[in-house]
Image 1 (cartoon, rainbow, N blue to C red):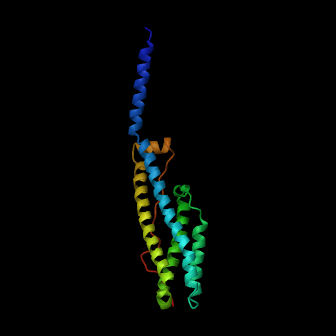
Image 2 (cartoon, rainbow, N blue to C red):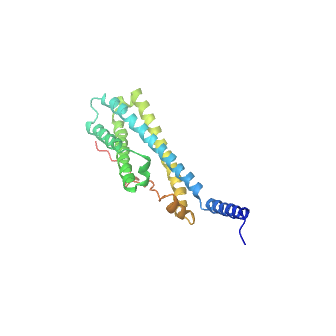
Image 3 (cartoon, rainbow, N blue to C red):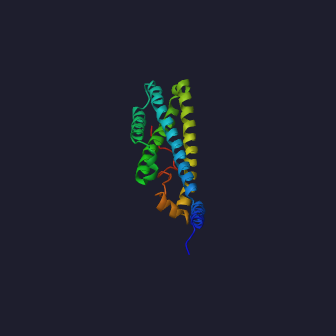
Length: 200
């Protein structure tokens, strides 16, 4: 008995439908969406770090106007900013745990240097009274808050993404179809629970 072409088309259509149903259950589209969510969250982290880096030169220039201000404190801020901006934050950075850690370490050094600078300013009433400095300080504090929020959103996006990449059966789709792996997330720096040490 020969198979009619109509039956062959039906079998092909049924096979295609079965493939679509299996693919929809494997999380292919959801993994793609989670991957994009991680990239978008990381872009916002980068954006806020860049905003902070852009504020630092203005802050340093304003503080330099106070002749008696500690030069070493300013130099530490300038050096930390140079180091933080020397690492190019590409979207691929979130796929490389070692590069991610290096980037975060440089950003952490800048955070520490800025914290020491702002604490040291307490000794300079003229500087605290300077309107330009107060405006920059407010912008910087606002940026630090934005960085914290952006990092939190990134952590949440990575958590959802990593859960899918590690869960069955989506882990098979992630590994064999999309070549996706678990992504690194932020970790507290050693000593982050302690205030910056400032010596006068």
